[in-house]
Image (cartoon, rainbow, N blue to C red; front, side, top):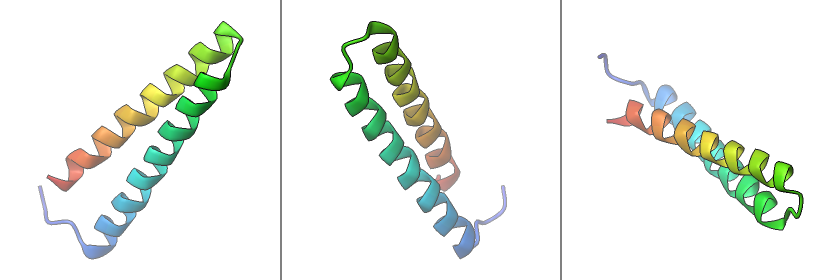
Length: 61
């Protein structure tokens, strides 16, 4: 794989940070939810954000 440019790295950092923020918010929403379906939806969204972050981090290796 070719070298990442400085702009590529900055964009990845921005996307990774956004994924972290989404994961944190979705987890918080899930904890606050009393409806089981809503809770499950936010838990799945948090898991998806976590997986997205991990996938993006893979580009930095």
